[in-house]
Amino acid sequence: MKIVIAPQTFKGSISALEVANAMRDGIELELEDAQLELVPVADGGDGTLETLVEISNG
Image 1 (cartoon, rainbow, N blue to C red):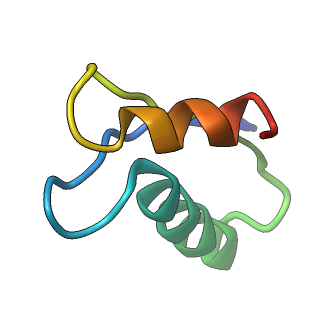
Image 2 (image 1 turned 30 degrees about the vertical axis):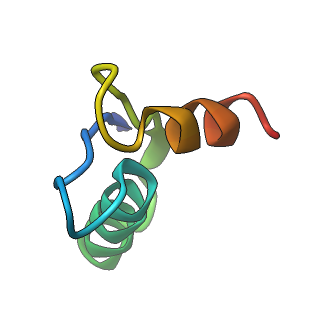
């Protein structure tokens, strides 16, 4: 099973990448064979620059 994880930032508390990683960790506990693709997204507000840097590998 392939699952795309595409969260947005939780303003003022956690970045989109941190949300994606937490979701991945939880899914992996139950679905060990799943193929997970992390795609953090941004809407131009808080966390956008950080998200762009992460998804473009720096």
